[in-house]
Length: 269
Length: 257
Image (cartoon, rainbow over all chains, first blue to last red; front, top):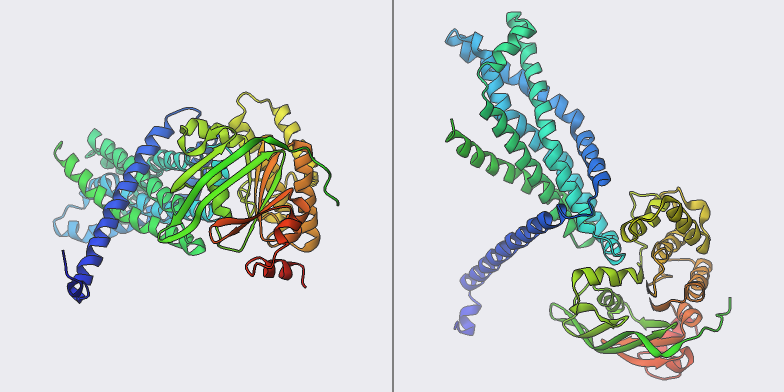
């Protein structure tokens, strides 16, 4: 056992803070694990909240639609514009549509959609549930014999998991339109030719991998936002923290998941 | 309005608490509480802020877990039953929150319908509408049915909060600071409403408050929570017939002596 004098040294305090932080980290990981298990237990058990899921899907779609349209188009346009000089060097501008399509459909569309949704949807889920927690609305649901977790969390997580793949597909097509605009302005390529060249290099795996990625991203955004909000505390400060935590954690996890999924899918190519 | 005489069945305890203890980190809030609530009775729990009054009713409704002791509600041990049974038990307990806790994304109608449609399987649209109109009429706010909570005054929000609990016809009502933050006239209206609920719905209630006017006009029995334990219990007059320095200032301040 450490003597009392040892316990007052700065080294001891530093170590003890580190141990405490580490313990808190693992406790948090365990709580998130329980939260996810609870989601799977409750989401697929009747009674189902179909109406609320549809309402949440609509909310998720509407919240991100404009921003995704603008961002997707700009990403496609800029990516094509920035790639052009390199391809010109090799006299390979005819490869531009293929390059754009691979980049957008494989990586950019799901990633850009997930990042925008983390900001718009994740933060709003965190803030919404957080404010419901601090104003005791979640407790009110609990004591009235209803299941707030099912109504508030499961519906939101299902909505993001279902809607973000749809939004990612939409972002992909909007991004391709942006790319087409640049190609058409420079080479005068027709829309039909451009689209033929776009789909030529894409294989079934590209679409499947993108779809799986978007589903994983959607689930992550929903779970992280809901977890942060559902367990927020400390009044209005907690609401802010929940919204901020939802965005930061979701974005970080999206990048980690992107790396993992890319590594896995590359084994199948 | 004078409180009408009610029939209290002193042989039938709807809530029975024994040796209840609850701490938050190192701070012991409740230090071994014994309490009985009888059928048909309005029991007021008085005490200073931070003495654990709200904690007590959150423990009763199963929102918090006790560190020690037993809580028996309508014959069932709250902390020793399955989630399903707890959910069923909660339908028989109405909880009126201090800040009303109305669902702010829903209209008054949707707020009232929410617990009903989820707890009464196969209920028809007509039955839902009738139930909503009945409770709104009981709290005197029929005209607010399509309004959002943000459009209501503090007193109206409290009433709608009470209506939302009444829609499930609870046997027990738990009121958390029902008159906090309201003007004196609205306080009187809320006190009358609590008495009316007791009469009309035959409920047994625990009313958490530090408002002595509320305690006097609604309580059949008063229990004073001091230092984590019930120190004084009885009628309003009995509780305040003392020179205890922890109790006297409470009375003197409330009645501006």
